[in-house]
Every structure is written in C-alpha cells, then in structure tokens.
Length: 154
Image (tube, rainbow, N blue to C red; front, side, top):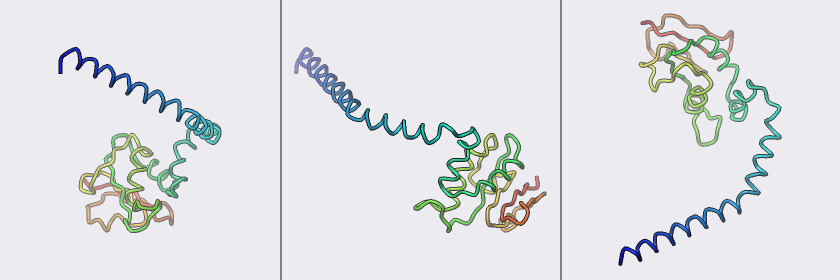
C-alpha cells in the first residue's frame, strides 16, 4: 500500500470514528439530560453534610458510627475499619468492604490502611477491637452502641 493510500485510509477511519462519536452523543444526549435534571431536582436542596452522608443512607451504613469515628480521629491518623465480613448492607458486597469503602472518603483527612497491624487507630463496628490481639492504649465505646475507637499502643 502506498503512503498516499495509507494516509487516505487513516483519514477515512478518523472521519468514521468522529461521525460515530457525534451520532452516539446526539443519540444519548436527551436521556442524559433528563437523568441529570432528575438528579439535580432530587439533590439540589441537600446541605453539604447531607451530600456527604447520602452514600451512607443509600447503602444502610450506620452514619452515627462514622460521626463517632470522625469525632475521635485526627488529621493523618492511620486507621483500620474492623467489622464482621459476613453481614451485608449492599447485595454482593460484604459489610466490611462496604464500611471500609465509605470510610475512605467520609473520614478524610485520616488515612485508611489495609491491615490492623499498619493502623494507629482501630475503628470497630459490631466487633470488640480487643479481639484483634493488638496492644491498645485507649478504647472508647459509643455509649451502649457497638462502635469502638481504639488507639494502638506505640
């Protein structure tokens, strides 16, 4: 194939790709706009705190536990969320993974770690942090709720 012919094929393919992209955009635009309008109508009245907590309410996450955790964490604390894996809030996602995922943004600027051994703070939902076998300096429970904040002894 000659250089001129190869260039013509490339230009034709680029034109076809651009035409397909434009057609796809025009076809999906009305439904996308309707979706964005519905979302705006639903969430525009939310306060900043409502927006922050919306994911918890939508997934049945105990927001009171996370507000308790936030009150006991400091900027840069390395934390691990401990929870039984068997129970589930979201179909197909175990409870522990759901809580850890939510914590990653809700508890910023504290920093999530992958294992209890890496943590300076253990945040527990439904399981006593003493069961992890780590040396703990301080353990605070949220009244009679099954939520604990435990600082690991350094």
